[in-house]
Image (cartoon, rainbow, N blue to C red):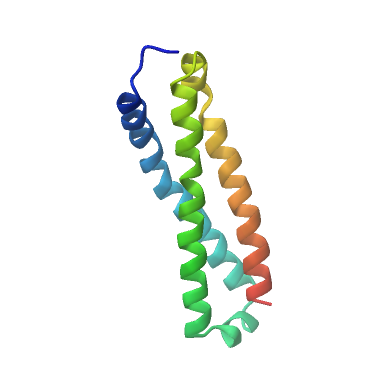
Length: 113
């Protein structure tokens, strides 16, 4: 085991992941806005309060899924691979954004068609 405590690993994870959550949400919001705009006027015809609430639920679920990075990050920091992990954890962020972006694309394309 590494000499880092669970408390230090959690604090480091929060310090790293929370600022990136804003970028994550901004990218997903931008993707939805672009898809909505690209499918005008059909998307405007389908827009309703129910659709807005459904998009809100999907945004909350995306943020819940984002929290999975904490589990991976904290466990990696507590392992003997801490030093390499701290240099490479940006890859987890990119993979997560790509995965969330793909899901967002499929959901949004279906909702605005």
